[in-house]
Image (cartoon, rainbow, N blue to C red; front, side, top):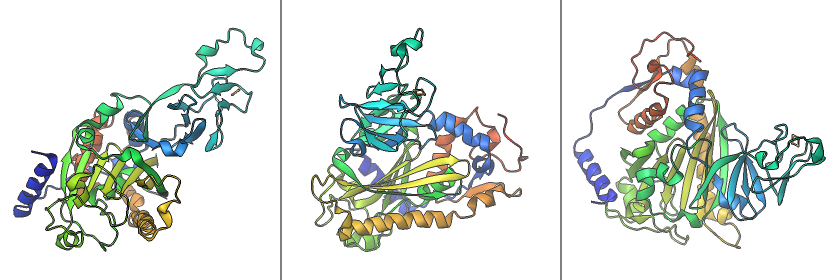
Length: 408
Ligand code: FES
């Protein structure tokens, strides 16, 4: 039985017998305490493989860009030997940033302070007045590397990986045959929201995006099939409703077939389920990937601190080569407008949410029965934090705890 068959069978069974609601509580301290956030930084963002960008952003040897989404200054370099590498952006002389501009191109990376110079493989290649540095061994002063791997043209980094990148994707990586390596960043935009990142994650998980499809009008979805996969990843398959299925030319919401979007180049390898539903894969911890026959949409969610979140929206389209970017065409302009509307809606919906969570009487969030994905994701998060944060801050902990600072 294929994944698609299993999902369809569960969806058919579900419509006959809706699951009983199981309210689950998320304690307020998860969202407001600084030390809970610090634990997330250390145990999750300090270890997980994180999407840092795409090769098309540093497409040619010598191009580099700084990357600080986890608040750790990193430097991504397309080295002259054609390998994408990542380093801490910290000079091995006195720790100044080696690169001070967000993007650039050079065959060598020269620190502005005292001109120590590194090649694009991180090797220290030049030290002015080197004789003044007694016992300096250049080979011991290379830039400090950070694990960096490229998969399907996406660049992932991890400061302390516990498994290699391919293993980290687990089942989710194995069941996807989408050829996303030929895609290119068409548009990227973001919004900073004054709320804990888990509230943003919760919003996106509870109502996954039904991406606009050219000529199909507004598409609505029905209850999703949610499955927790190994590694904490989630597959969320939301069939379109009858009207949506009809607008897409499907015989019914569960009659999936290979679709394409009229007049737009196709993303290859989607298969019937991904092209006929609103399917999102959440790659733990913070990357949402949603599919259409002609483009892929990502949300990435980055905590700035315990009460600030950067929400980033990215559209990827089949590479348009030397042609003009299709961003101005009506179909893509509409999709970009839609992405901006999603960011605006998230910011509006979560305005004031952080202050509400700080109210002394507030004991947390009670998840509704349609929030299965939110619960599963929070539990996956807890799997990394258990033993590090107090038990009464974990998903489902009983209400009534005394609010006090977490031990540090
Ligand atoms: S701190 Fe970089 S050369 Fe001195």
